[in-house]
Image (cartoon, rainbow, N blue to C red):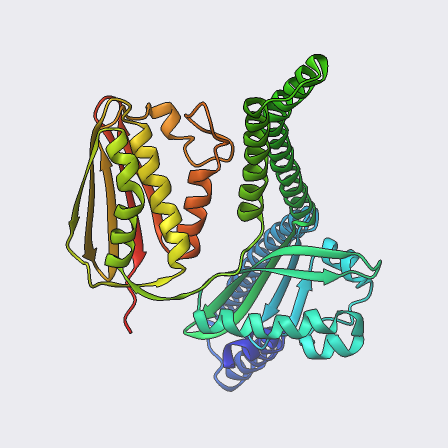
Length: 419
């Protein structure tokens, strides 16, 4: 405080000191005359010249420093005003000190009325931005409390009525542990958000197109067969049970395709309840044992957690495991072995299905589970996609590992329920 007063009154101090020096020295010469009076006068003048020169030097130095600081400030101002971002400087009490040209144009701050005012006071002056300014208070306070940079997205309605989204960074400034200032920088990301939304829509359209192509391809095949046999019946003007069976079989295939699509796309009603792991394993063995015997496949079970409890739709999970077992049987056309292994790890029930089939090439393994991708001649490639979806709905994971010539391992992890 004293230092600031001294700087402001320096000219007055110098004037009084100079007046005192001249008056006091003359008084001494009159009071104590001496033969060396001339030397005294010269010395007095030299002292006065020395201090005056020193003072002028300090003034010039101070002036040069001021000019340099002013030039740097102008450069900084030019840089900040040239930024295509919203920039606002606040003091430790949250009062607006300065904003750049972009912010002035954004808020129509053509006057300096905003200076030294808080967000609350500015909200009263500009009610259109009240909601945004009130939000600023909360976010500013959170930044102060964290004592580090924060980043949020904020949506603002500008005077033109357009909604803009800003990526806002707040940087708190401290001096000796006290709040000194806050710098807010906001970049308009509205165009980026619009581009992301457009990309999402295009992705959806792409998926719809892929889905439509897959459906058309899968349904067209049985329809072509049905058309051919109907034309054959018409040309021969006769009907037999074999042709009718083929037509009915192809119609059933179309119905199955549509049914699978409905299950895949539309949420079905689920029966959620607790059940034992052993319930699934036992039912699975009974359901697939006959087909396994027909294909010379040996199924071995290592059920270490028969009494472990799962929670979910048992029928859906059975559907998943039946699909996995059938895929394993299909992968062993000349016979082989399937091992079903279960164990618990960190409250997670793991169920492995390991076969000794032909395996899956690496490039195809990466596409397994994608809609309409299949390794089978018959089928539409939705089995594993639906299975993966069912496991995800049960908060589990579905992983496939395979090597050509060695076989495939399917690892399904489900959360263990604690009654």
